[in-house]
Image (cartoon, rainbow, N blue to C red; front, side):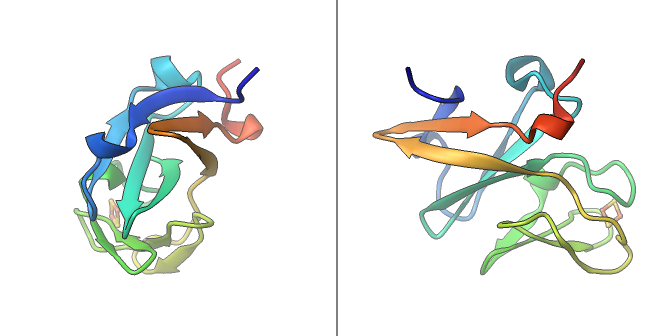
Length: 113
Ligand code: FES
Protein backbone atom coordinates (compact mmCIF):
# COMPACT_ATOMS: atom_id res chain seq x y z
CA UNK A 1 0.00 0.00 0.00
CA UNK A 2 1.29 3.48 -0.86
CA UNK A 3 2.00 5.94 1.89
CA UNK A 4 0.32 9.27 2.39
CA UNK A 5 -2.49 11.16 0.73
CA UNK A 6 -2.41 12.17 -2.93
CA UNK A 7 -2.91 15.94 -2.84
CA UNK A 8 -2.05 16.98 -6.42
CA UNK A 9 -0.27 16.04 -9.60
CA UNK A 10 3.17 17.43 -10.29
CA UNK A 11 1.93 19.48 -13.25
CA UNK A 12 -0.71 21.16 -11.06
CA UNK A 13 2.05 23.29 -9.50
CA UNK A 14 4.28 25.23 -11.93
CA UNK A 15 7.90 25.85 -10.97
CA UNK A 16 8.12 28.72 -8.47
CA UNK A 17 4.52 28.39 -7.33
CA UNK A 18 2.51 26.70 -4.61
CA UNK A 19 -0.96 25.45 -3.84
CA UNK A 20 -2.86 25.31 -0.57
CA UNK A 21 -4.35 21.96 0.46
CA UNK A 22 -7.28 22.24 2.82
CA UNK A 23 -6.82 20.75 6.28
CA UNK A 24 -9.97 18.68 5.71
CA UNK A 25 -8.07 16.80 2.98
CA UNK A 26 -4.83 16.36 4.89
CA UNK A 27 -6.37 15.67 8.31
CA UNK A 28 -4.13 18.28 9.89
CA UNK A 29 -4.71 21.23 12.19
CA UNK A 30 -3.62 23.71 9.51
CA UNK A 31 -3.93 23.84 5.75
CA UNK A 32 -0.74 22.74 4.05
CA UNK A 33 1.16 24.65 1.37
CA UNK A 34 2.84 22.49 -1.29
CA UNK A 35 5.63 24.24 -3.20
CA UNK A 36 7.49 23.56 -6.45
CA UNK A 37 10.95 25.06 -6.17
CA UNK A 38 12.96 24.25 -9.27
CA UNK A 39 11.19 20.92 -9.77
CA UNK A 40 11.56 19.84 -6.13
CA UNK A 41 8.41 19.67 -4.06
CA UNK A 42 8.10 20.70 -0.41
CA UNK A 43 5.26 21.06 2.09
CA UNK A 44 4.88 23.33 5.11
CA UNK A 45 2.01 24.41 7.32
CA UNK A 46 0.28 27.10 5.29
CA UNK A 47 -0.20 29.67 8.04
CA UNK A 48 2.76 31.92 8.71
CA UNK A 49 3.91 31.74 12.34
CA UNK A 50 4.00 35.54 12.59
CA UNK A 51 0.44 36.48 11.74
CA UNK A 52 -2.10 34.70 9.61
CA UNK A 53 -0.82 35.04 6.05
CA UNK A 54 -0.93 32.10 3.67
CA UNK A 55 2.57 30.93 2.78
CA UNK A 56 1.17 29.37 -0.41
CA UNK A 57 0.82 32.98 -1.63
CA UNK A 58 4.45 33.77 -0.83
CA UNK A 59 7.48 34.02 -3.08
CA UNK A 60 9.97 31.22 -3.60
CA UNK A 61 13.69 31.70 -4.00
CA UNK A 62 16.32 28.99 -3.80
CA UNK A 63 14.81 26.81 -1.09
CA UNK A 64 13.15 29.64 0.81
CA UNK A 65 9.58 30.95 0.93
CA UNK A 66 9.02 34.60 1.74
CA UNK A 67 5.74 35.42 3.46
CA UNK A 68 3.52 37.69 1.33
CA UNK A 69 2.50 39.90 4.26
CA UNK A 70 5.68 41.01 6.10
CA UNK A 71 8.42 39.13 4.24
CA UNK A 72 9.37 36.67 6.99
CA UNK A 73 11.33 33.79 5.45
CA UNK A 74 11.19 30.04 6.04
CA UNK A 75 13.31 27.13 4.83
CA UNK A 76 11.27 24.91 2.50
CA UNK A 77 13.19 21.78 3.57
CA UNK A 78 12.74 22.19 7.32
CA UNK A 79 10.23 24.95 8.09
CA UNK A 80 12.95 26.77 10.04
CA UNK A 81 12.35 30.50 10.37
CA UNK A 82 15.12 32.45 8.64
CA UNK A 83 14.18 36.09 9.07
CA UNK A 84 12.18 38.56 11.10
CA UNK A 85 9.50 39.52 11.80
CA UNK A 86 8.64 35.81 12.09
CA UNK A 87 10.38 34.16 15.04
CA UNK A 88 8.87 30.66 15.14
CA UNK A 89 9.35 27.75 12.77
CA UNK A 90 6.44 26.29 10.84
CA UNK A 91 5.79 22.55 10.63
CA UNK A 92 7.32 20.67 7.73
CA UNK A 93 5.65 17.69 6.06
CA UNK A 94 7.06 14.86 3.96
CA UNK A 95 6.42 14.84 0.23
CA UNK A 96 6.81 11.76 -1.94
CA UNK A 97 6.65 11.98 -5.72
CA UNK A 98 5.04 8.83 -7.04
CA UNK A 99 5.00 9.06 -10.83
CA UNK A 100 2.92 12.18 -11.42
CA UNK A 101 1.26 12.04 -8.01
CA UNK A 102 2.31 14.23 -5.10
CA UNK A 103 1.80 12.27 -1.91
CA UNK A 104 1.83 14.06 1.39
CA UNK A 105 2.73 12.48 4.71
CA UNK A 106 1.78 14.98 7.40
CA UNK A 107 3.95 15.59 10.44
CA UNK A 108 2.22 13.37 13.03
CA UNK A 109 2.36 16.14 15.61
CA UNK A 110 0.15 18.25 13.35
CA UNK A 111 -2.67 15.75 12.84
CA UNK A 112 -6.10 16.87 13.95
CA UNK A 113 -7.35 14.81 16.85
FE1 FES B 1 4.15 36.29 7.74
FE2 FES B 1 4.03 38.55 9.11
S1 FES B 1 2.39 37.26 8.53
S2 FES B 1 5.81 37.59 8.28
